[in-house]
Amino acid sequence: MSCQGREGTRWLIVSKRQTGVGWGGCEGRVRRRGPGMTAQIIDGKRLSHIMEQGLASEVALMKSRGERPPGLGVILVGENPASHAYVRNKERFAHRIGFATFDVRLNDGASHDDVARAIDQFNESPAVDGILLQLPLPWGLPTDLLLERIDPRKDADGLHPMNQGLLQKGTEYASPCTPSGVMKLLDWTLAGYPDSLEGLPRASLAGKTAVVVGRSILVGKPVATMLLERNATVTMAHSKTPNLSAVCRTADILVVAVGVPFLVKGEFFKEGAIVLDVGINRLETGDLVGDVAFDQASLRASAITPVPGGVGPMTVAMLMANTLLLRKRFGGG
Image (cartoon, rainbow, N blue to C red; front, side, top):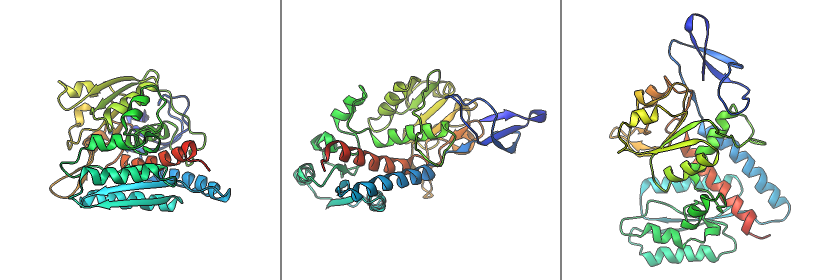
């Protein structure tokens, strides 16, 4: 957010005490930025680390009571280097917080039956509370059918059709990880980036306009539902929406998840908007970039997630939070 200083100079709020759910007011420590406004970076790595500490404490307490730790079952199919890197990061996070992990690794030639058997093995195991089927699967494997085979009570990714449907009622067993991470980042931002999540409120977004660019079942549709549940007025858009820039300029909260580098750029942003960039795209140069033109957005937004280091780390943290939740709800003693 910004405030007017002497001679029209803008100031960036670095830390402040948030009151209510609006982002008005000029209390707090400030840093001079000159004539243009530079957005506060929403540090997903920092928030993920805060969540990691909290999850580790909960697991340690469970173990001290003689209870078994949460178990995460991971199924990795094929040799996709990015998928292998993602799984390594997830398993390292799980080990740091004290989870038990179990994995099945299948080669590119694995059949539907091979993957189904791995899912069934984890469905039936009392030591596994959450199942992750790493996506994307190799070409030819029926992703939807295999996701449907996961027990909804062990659906750590929140992608089973039953959980997707229950999300509309707010009674899902587990919420999709990336949308949940977006909402946690939003709550944290509106609370002023606290160092602890204890007592972090679920922000009411009544009176705020949210625009979601992207309509996938992985991010766009569920995050729109979550924003609506918080009383935001939600507009869904996508890469084929006419006059997309005008739609985006209405947004107090802008979530972009399309998979098109720099689709959303300078003229798309409302002054003071919060921008959450879910896209992650690798350019020919090897650079990772988002769907949002970061440098242009940061001149108008009040806060923005970077790529990498924004939403991505929170997706992993929410996977672990879901697994712990499922352990508590369905895992027994």
